[in-house]
Each structure stands twice: as C-alpha cells, then as structure tokens.
Length: 74
Image (cartoon, rainbow, N blue to C red; front, top):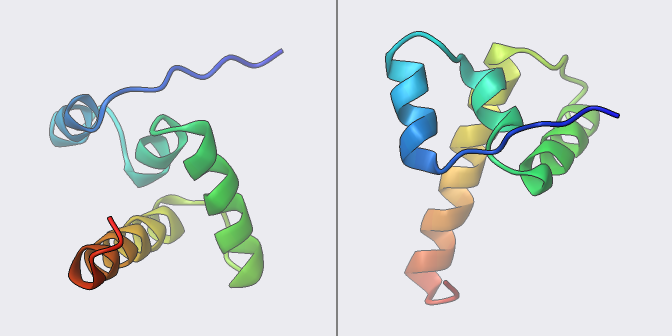
C-alpha cells in the first residue's frame, strides 16, 4: 500500500524553492483531493502527468480560488 505524505502549502513552496520538489511533487504532496482532481484534469485535457501539466493544474486551481473569492463564495 502506497503512503503519501501531505504537507502544508508553505512547506511545499519551501521544498520547491530549494529544488527538492517540482510541480508534480507539489500536486502529489498537497492533498489526496488534489491528486484525484489532477488525474481528472489530465484525463479531460489529454495531458500526461508531468511537471508541465502539474503547473497548469496549479494555475487552474489558483484561478478557481480567485474566482470564488471575487464572487464571495469562499
């Protein structure tokens, strides 16, 4: 059984800044929910699971959050 450790966002950012993690690691260690959403995102857009598509996914999530904040849903 595979066990993934999830980290708070500030730790993930630090790991990326230190060069320890790339975008794919960032997504996979963010949360199980993000892992599932990312897999679905890749499937819907016919993208391979790699750093490039993971970065696109993170920007997609940021845009969703911004839209929710602007509409008062968050």
